[in-house]
Image (tube, rainbow, N blue to C red):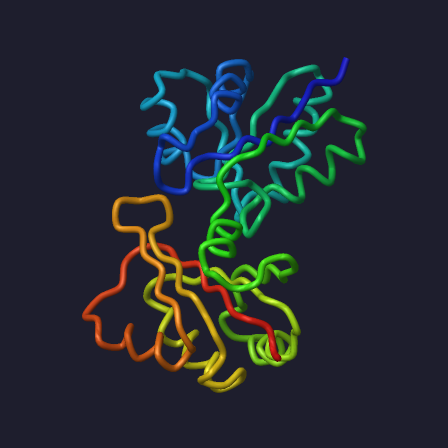
Length: 225
């Protein structure tokens, strides 16, 4: 009898966002696939849960996926987490889920915290329809993606690191114009959660005045009028 893969969301900052259903799932599985065992270990320790861990990340997923599929076929129940939020969204997981579907293995996806959705709603920009881009490529293909995004008629969402956000906003001004409305959503669900809203030029100017910027960032951008 084939086992089951449970896709388990984890908090993006505030541990109180861990759902009861996710905690119950963690207690029920035979093995937890995790992006970083140190991060997953801290989460499990906080909630006093003990379960074996197996690294599953961008650097080993192609090698490990066949092994995991075989474990599932043997009847084991496995959990999949990323470091924060929902697995497979700009994080490892899609490859495993795709192969599990092909192998007719049962998959259960649990609802939970997601930075893109929080940013979209909190931005104040239209979110009845939006495009999720995630991380832009650092080099090859970056210009092509910007040209595509600049012409979208609806809101789009990017993920960006704190040390690259100024560059990202500068490029946004170049491709979309300084008047394009944006929201920089930083440290979501954490103590120093912050939304910086306004046109792109204003938000870039505000960030350039800061000595340092911390926390992972969701950048929400209004569509072209």
